[in-house]
Image (cartoon, rainbow, N blue to C red):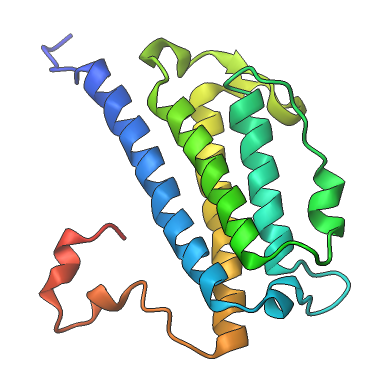
Amino acid sequence: MSNVNLPDLSAVHQAFIRTAASRLRQQEARILDCLSRLSDDQIWARGNPNSNSVGNLVLHLIGNLGQWVIAGVGGEPDARDRDSEFNTQSGISSAELAIRLHSRLDEVVRIVETLPAERLLESVTPQGYTLPVMEVITHITEHFYHHGGQIILLTKLYLDVDLAYYRHLAKNNIAHVKKIP
């Protein structure tokens, strides 16, 4: 066996946690921006009975984060009512949705950022799935981006605007090398 320099596992743990928290916050900022641009009617509009509104997607993200991280990883009781996330059709303003999402992200990021390295491989069982905490963090990050992308698309469709989240990548803009994609 050759002398291979293994990375410091503490540094790998810290980089993983920092990246997950940073990505969640980045997408949160985009979702909050979309919420601030949309009217309450647009937030609850559904293209058809089989589609979700922006409001439903935000409620779904709040519920998912609570079930997978706050309950699944953090050990709090699981109080999620998944059906109501999709059945709600009005009554919550964009400002209230933004407050709820931001508050939930604060809780989630606090749990993620304080996870000791040894917990990353610990098995937990959110939503009936048994998997390591590291996979839970990966799942909620990708899930947050997936539905955040739907919110961004709906916002662009409703408002016919360029949200400019990637304007820094324009060919003549050298600032893009300092941005996270």
